[in-house]
Length: 127
Image 1 (tube, rainbow, N blue to C red):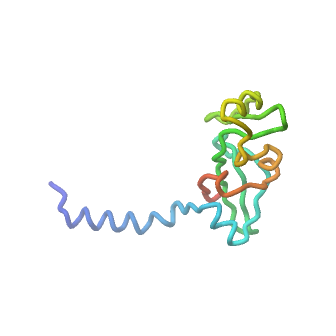
Image 2: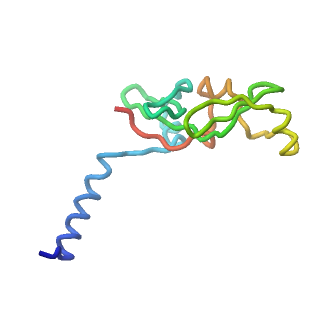
Image 3: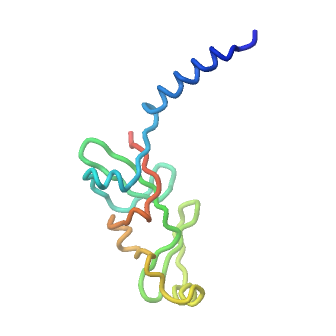
């Protein structure tokens, strides 16, 4: 028995009505404007780096969007897709791009939760 357009439209409408209750992603900047506090850098259940952002009752895990960060004048770290943190030579990096990158965060700031919205990816609710 073929499915009619009417049945398909009703099923789609019900699906879209239920979807916001299932997953409600937020942006870090929106959560920060609402007064959410940012925790220290941690790993999520998937092994990805990020921060727990909470306001007391609601908590979100916000993934890190940074590919690398400065450690000091000689070292920096790079983050792999699998969640590993690799030490790299900052002098070589800076020479390649023509000098220090003023937008690159420092690892100590990321670890402490002092992040910019540009350093943070999507935020998903914690259960």
